[in-house]
Image 1 (cartoon, rainbow, N blue to C red):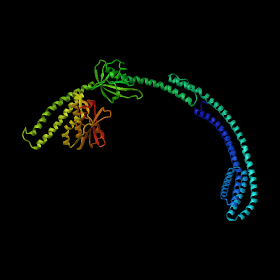
Image 2 (spheres, rainbow, N blue to C red; image 1 turned 135 degrees about the horizontal axis):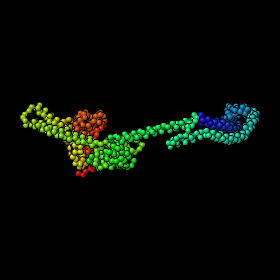
Image 3 (cartoon, rainbow, N blue to C red; image 1 turned 90 degrees about the horizontal axis):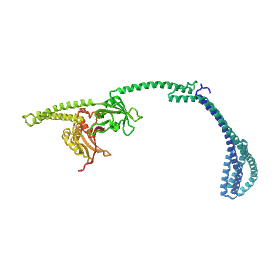
Image 4 (cartoon, one colour; image 1 turned 135 degrees about the vertical axis):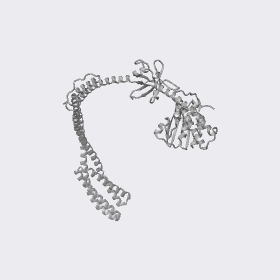
Length: 607
């Protein structure tokens, strides 16, 4: 087969020839089957016609006999049988004529039979009519006249029927011979067609395979050589698909060689960039139960004072620990979302504060990319900032306390009598000074908390008592702002592990913020436990208050107007709750705004 022809054309030629032989074979076989079916149907029809025609004479005699009985005896049963046999006779004559439409000679002969029977039935009908209307003597005379006439009709019907049945029996006896001959022809055609089709198929397949097998073997060998990075064989000649595939393999081989050079150069360049980056990079393998370091760049090794390659296969928990009161080795990386602050242990045993983050760079493997940034300098700056804030706050709070005391004594007449307007302004100034002192105290507490300098004495405290205390502390504020605070108690006695004073401070800050946000409506405090009874949630539901998404995101930021500034109340409350292993947030539920806090539930105290 010419190699310039495409495989599609070659395949079409082979399949076309096979289909041509198949169509010829199927056509001949179908013609024989149709002829056999036609003969079989003709034989069956002849049998049915013979069976039906054989009974016509009997039915004809029964009809005549019953009409005679009726004429002589007025027998109604005989009348019914006469009518039944007459109808049956006409129905079978009609069916037989329908079967004989394709045989003109038999059809004409049967029409003569039908004419004779129809004529006789008309005479029977006349006899019945006379029997119904005339005397028995008149009927008897008409019956005698009818008898000779019916004898002639019967002879004609019998002769024609015998001739008709002889012809149909000849057709019936000739059909088995024709069917047998058709079966023999079909058998020979089937055997010959199968043999011929097998021979033609083998010839065409051998012809097709012989023309492409050797070329495909070359292509297959080139594919293996390409996989093993070996030189390919000489390109195939021709314009068919096999030659095109072989040419593609050669082009792919050249392209792969060029790509390998580029990848090798790019890998070396990337490795150089990674090694020279000022931040620590490493690959964390999480396929086992314990995460391990799979790779660490030179910056990370230098930061932790390790030699080249010493960090590889080191347990992540042996190098990094969490910060806070309950510091523990980092074993579960799934809880890390975004940058977190950790303590990195150097080879010498000293600790270093770092910012640690993980990211997925290949979802098909268990390895994740981690960045480690030294934040010790940042900590020093934060300490300096905390010292500065503490110094300024202290220098500001001391004189403000004296000013607040002066404003408090002024209305009491210690410094003389003043007008009511002056006293009102003095009370307003006193309130503003107290708010400023509170703001300074919050700022000090927040900075101490961030620096880990705020003293905490965790104990088991009853949550309901703390919430009742917060409601009492904020009662005057709620009354001044026209806000109703509703707290119906806890669903059961609930205890949490926390510093009593600090937790009370946090709950009071959140409730005070909720009251300030409420517009002369209701703040409802709701306490609930989760299904596992491991966390307790406190909701402050502020009725008929809606905020934008931007305001919700900024509500825990210091000095954010949402819709007016809340100072440091919410940031301080959030920081205190986080120090106890809890958290807090805000949510918009239909028409209400919900400030919420979650704390780990410890035990239910007994009173």
